[in-house]
Image (cartoon, rainbow, N blue to C red; front, side, top):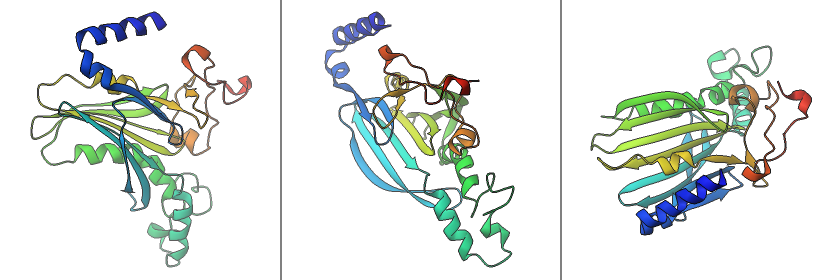
Length: 246
C-alpha cells in the first residue's frame, strides 16, 4: 500500500508538477475529518436550518483551484435534544405536532419537538437540498459508505454545465457534506472524494469493522461497531471490547 502511494505521488509530480503539488492533506480533529484540499482551506462559520426548522452551527471549509470549487461542510446536530425539549415545553398542551414525543416508547424514534426524527432525517434532507436546486439534473444518487460510515453520494449537472460530486455522511451526530464542483468538461474531483477520512479527537483515523449507521449508533440505540487497529494506516484501537464486535 505504501509503495502504490509513493508511485502515485511521483507520477503526479512529473505529469502536473504545479497543480499536483498544491493539493495538501488537511485534517481537523475538532470536527473529526481529513481530506485533500488544493491548499489550506478558508474556514467560515454560519448556520444550518434543519428539516424541522432548528438552527444549528455550521462550519464550512472551502478552497478553489482552476475553476473548481471544493468544500467540506460540518453541521453539529448534538444540540438537537436540548433544542427539542425547549420547543416541546413551550408547546400548548395536546399539540403533538409541536411537542413530538418527549417521553414514552417513541422518545427514541421521534423525540421531543421531533428532534430525534430530525437527526434520522439529516442525510435525506441534506441530499434533498441539492436535488431540489432549480435546473439541476441528477445523474447518480447512491447509498455509499466511507470507512464503513453510512452516507449518500450524488452526482449532479448544474444549469451552467458544471458538475457537482457530493458525498454526505453522518458520524456521532455530526453531518458531513463534501462537495467538489468543477466546470463543464473538467475531470471528476476524484482526489477530493477518495481522500476523505474520519478521525477522533486525538487525530487517530476511524474505520469500523461493520457499517456505522448514525440513526442507530449515533443515537445510542446500538453500541458503535468495533474499530480496526492498523497502526500503518493511522487507525485507532477498537472503540469497544472485542466482545462487542458482531
